[in-house]
Length: 421
Image 1 (cartoon, rainbow, N blue to C red):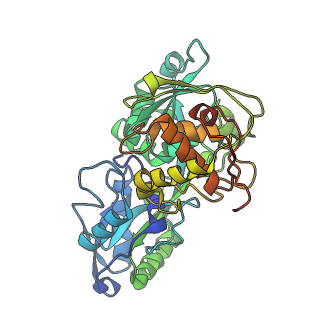
Image 2 (image 1 turned 120 degrees about the horizontal axis):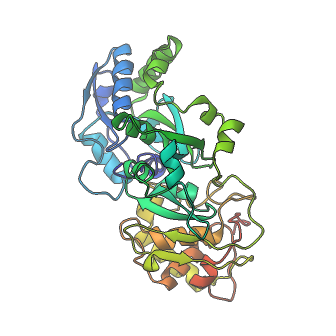
Image 3 (image 1 turned 45 degrees about the vertical axis):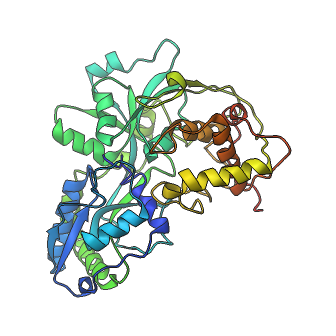
């Protein structure tokens, strides 16, 4: 989807630093509200159906904005400022706003309803005879995994073993990569699979759980400050719809299959791969990435392996902080707290122990795909300084040896947060 599942990817995290949103006081008592959906969302049809049912049950007339949230033709995600403008200008409530435990928006100015759809990211592969001819590893034993660029699917798949990556710009294209044989598997938000099946009913996929902190999501209604009464009426209506079975009927075809949602043994064993859910590897390994349509050092990045955390110095941290402010803060927040992209600090990014992300894996992802509006624009030295800043802000201490790009990308050390400075 445009904003590349950033509506799930990353739009969820935008609430972490949302600016003050001026919402018309009339929405507190009005019998009519303007509703927006997230642009390009594969669940937009569901979101509108649920919004109509909820607001009708609440006795509120709904008008759907034609412009939509941040529907300005760009593809750089949604900033808190853009969100604020959209809420002031175009709508009173957003239907289909994604939330997760990773980006719960606890510090935002937005108000949220209870969830009406529990969904998440899944791993898909072709089902049937055609799958046998396409789901074959290359001579080097690696398979191609499709993921949506600059979205949680890329974060979930960042340490997939024995894989090359086909990075697509929308969730629809990510599913299509499997359907058309460009990739053997894909990591994608489940409603994108449902929407693809609606458009291509002859297409069938095997679906497996993608276990990751970034995989679990809920769709909710979101609105600005001063809309407590509106959100209470929405919650009351959702409770009524849930109790009489109407909500289940509306969402039945969009909900994760029970075996997927519970991560049953049957589902888990169907997938030959697991995503960020296994023990951290003790043995060195090499990752190879293939990136479609984006600069990536000729298309391949080969990574040697080391086993110790790399050193970095104070000057690199200072320069990295400057680079972050210029190129990263818009999406990841001024204090790394998350905005239109996930937080880069705290337990969801660098837990105290048992991290499934390695320093090298994060550096590979960052240096290949960031910043989102100009991937790969920095020099190796600048990416190394930026990595030094990320390490420092997550508890690692400075040393006397500069961090090099080679040392950063070859590190297999888990990113476990160190003691606070």
